[in-house]
Length: 182
Ligand code: SF4
Image 1: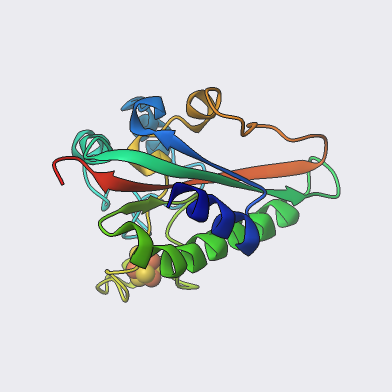
Image 2: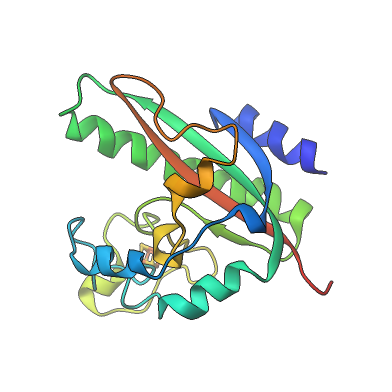
C-alpha cells in the first residue's frame, strides 16, 4: 500500500513524497509561541489554528498514535524572493492538493490524521471570524505547525529538501496512518 500512496500523491501533483516512520517526526511545543506572535494573522481567526485548535501537548501526543506518515511536498515557482502573491498562490495550491489527497487516500489508509500547511483554508472566510461554528468539521485540516511539527528538522531525515532552489517556495504535509494498537 505504501508505494501506492506515494504514487497517487505524485500523480495528483506532489513534487516529492515518501513514507516515513512517526519516529522521524520531530515536534516541539515552541511552535505555539511562534503562532502566538501572529505573524500570519490567523490567531483566533480560524477554528483549525491556535488557540481554537487546542493545546499543543495533546496535539503532539495525537501524532504518536500513528506508526507512519506519507510525507509530501509541493514546490511553487516565484518571480523573485519578494513575490508574496506567488507564495500565497502556491500555498493555496498545496492546500487544495491536501484536500484532494484526503478524498483519494482515506479509503486506503483507514484511521488517519492529515496535516497541511498554513490554516485550514477550506473556506474563503473561516466561520471563526464571525463566531459561527465550523462549516466542515469532518473535513477541516490543521497545519503541521499547529500540531508542533518541526518541518525543517523532520525533513532532514528524508529525501525531501526543505529548500528547492532560487525563486521557489516549498510547502509540506503529512498524512499519518497505521494507528498503533490496531
Ligand atoms: S472548514 Fe471553513 S469554517 Fe471550518 S475551520 Fe476550515 S475554514 Fe474555518
